[in-house]
Image (tube, rainbow, N blue to C red):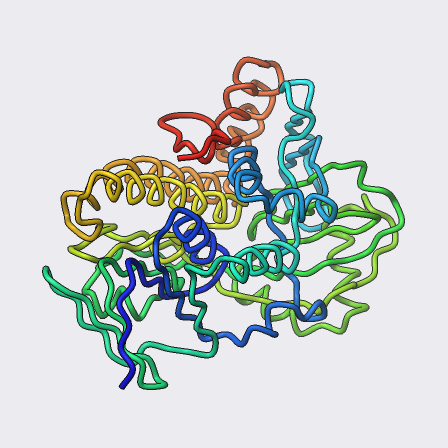
Length: 409
């Protein structure tokens, strides 16, 4: 069996795991990424339905890595956000909240990027870094981690030893389960249908989120007369609507959207996935750490899942790089506890915010609907609160890692 010793092995080669590998590799770490996907699967345009709303902090991190200049040409700034509360699919109440760029110094609130362009740019950078080994079409068949060593056996027989193992394989995570990481979880009994559509009326860089009783509907602008949608609803409703023909599905979607984009047509296939809340009771163990969706799976209502994971990456990378410069054992609890303490409060605050927002704004309870309408009205009349909320959403509040500030470590 072939054996190899690296500084860090990352299980899971999604955007979060790949970004961490790239940052560490560029800073002299020897890194291996283990991913089940074939490389070519990342670049099938017809299979790509996901898009992400990147906040300012995430864009700064990508700029430091030389990635933002590559993906920017395929991105779409969001300069306006409209939040509305709907009482049913066919009726939207006059409770709405608007955010615009005149509340900020920058020229955008978020930037929308399709997954295929972001992933492609990251992989191209990884391919240029000799410190990174990307093991495609691979899975871990044996995992042994204790206070003194790590051992991962891959299905091709290769054995990887490292100073640290990072789990970024999503939720539920087989690697976290093997490490006996426990979770708090909650099933929302909801599913999200996602896809991309073309439309007749220009979006004018506006994102829309409608809080329907069954769950939120988000319409997010993409380059051209195109938008991404994330339509979350109770499982029974989602299963029924997902099975409709394209024509009938688009009719339902346009009704929910109140025809705000005019005639719409599918550009991509539809996809559907279940929604649940999960966050780990601990982020680290000796020589083992979890990041991204492996550590916290949140409701898509605020579109902050990827940004939260990128903050994990920025914080963990900074802790590991600085600790290595001091000659510390990067897999020790002494080092990893720094990361855990740094990230725990931010993760919990976002988890509870998204959970509360979904339960409070998407429901049929008259008192909650009335109260949320009053909240919308009060917020619309307070630029101070709006500025605070936009500062929080930008990813630039609190104890910010250097990479999110646009600074090298």
